[in-house]
Image 1 (cartoon, rainbow, N blue to C red):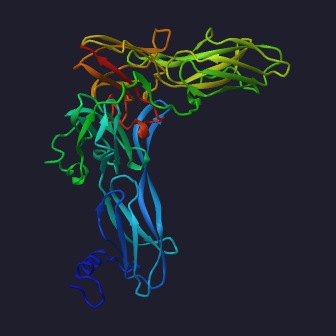
Image 2: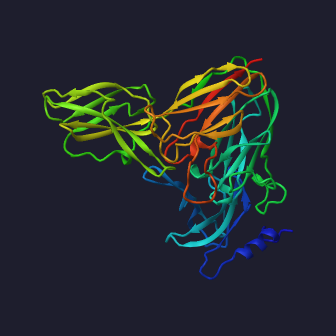
Image 3: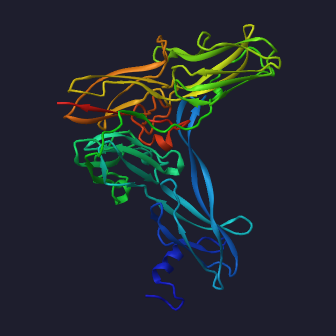
Length: 481
């Protein structure tokens, strides 16, 4: 029952609970103390001085991956972050009501503060964001993908690793380390045509905890919102592509992976484009070299083996690129075909009289060099060769998934091979029809023990992979009668 002031008895009790000491200007109460990204809530200010202006602040964190030398993955790292929600002015009764939409942000508790003109916090309350997931559609042709988007993921170690299953088989994990807790994953529509089940699970150990929605101390996945969908796979109008790579981004090489050169001077070496796949035609341009002088262009590979204890270092391959001659102004320009090699930064140096005087790099991106055959009966040996698979921890263990079932990983560390490629052979399996191989990025190693992300298909690689976004690789094989 409302009293004469128009404030309900429930709200009055809440206001009393939130009253602070004599140093407080007033009281802040939220219409809801928990909810989801995108929810609309009302921030209620009461008992403030009349006709005064205040700022509303949202306290959260900013996430990133801790990475050393562009290589070793430490783990998720978070720093405090404060955003301004808005500015309010109290009415004649010292009150305000401000409607606000919960932004895309990490899950868990967030302080909302009221500050005065001096920047002092004069009232506060808390709102807890519950993670939840959405799916873009529930019907897709064979070979296309269902896209799952997660909101409010992390930063808590328990709520930072979610697993996605297809027909009760664990496909891989999603995480929201970056992008303020928002992550996307594409799940292949695999056969046979008909109804299938996609479900999101939660567990910091990287595998589904099957009591998520019955006896978990952290409550059900998504707080009770939908986290399991029955989807339908339909017959495609045409045959799927045989082999393809996700769209590649324009990237820059990482200088941290350059070798030390013998002398630093005015000589400059540039490459265009700075990124691409093996076979890309690139233009190397040199400036400020000695006039009318031969310049040796030297290609570098990273060689070594972590498991064997052999350090991975950039090693010169002097016979890969040409020798050029500068003009009267000490400049040159030459076209080169990017050779097959391991991924990440491929250093290129320019040497004069045996001394390296300039360096640049090319960001090598993955490509499918061999996928054969594309059809055959059960048991057919499928030959797969990939180039541009990096030596760095965050990209050197691509994980093979066959019809949404994880199979295993390959290693991109260069050893005794001369091509810098990754070679694997699989056996075709399943009923007659199309079957799909998806190769996802994974993390070979992580220094922090929790949550467990190591050597598992990273389904949110599109927007949450360490260091740089990596593409996945995809193939389709037709099992014949």
